[in-house]
Amino acid sequence: KSYDVMHVNIDNFIKTANAKFQEKDYPIQLTNWFSVWSILYTKPGRYHWLFQYFLKDAGVSLSWVGTGRLLFSLEWKKEDYDRLLERLLSACEQMQKGGWWEEPKANIKAKLGVEIGTAVFKNVLGLTG
Image (cartoon, rainbow, N blue to C red; front, side, top):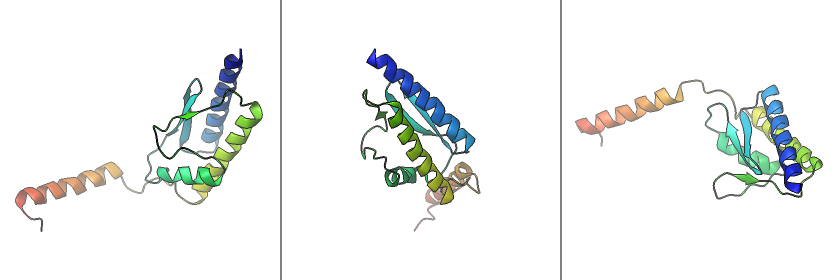
C-alpha cells in the first residue's frame, strides 16, 4: 500500500514538474522508473553541467559521484515533492537569468567536425609542430 501511494505521488510530481518546465521553456525534463528518477536535457547546450551548482544553491544536494540516477524516499509526502519542485524551478530560473541556457549561436557539431578534420589533415600532412 505504501509503495502504491509513493508511486502515485512520484508520477504526479514528474508530470507536474515537466509541465512547469515546458511552460517556462526550461530545457529539462524529468523521467522516472518507479522511485528512480533522472534529469534529462531537451536542448543541446555547453553549460548544462552548471545546473548541479544552481541546484545546490537552491537547497538540492546531489551525489557528486555515480550514475546520475536519483531516488525518492518512501516517507516523502506531497509537501516534500512540492518543496523539491520549488527548488528545481528556482535553480532553472537562475540558470536562465544567467544566460547559461541560451541557444548556441553556431552548429556545435559542425564546428567540432571542422576543427577535428583540420587537425587530422594537418597531422597526416606533417604540418603540426
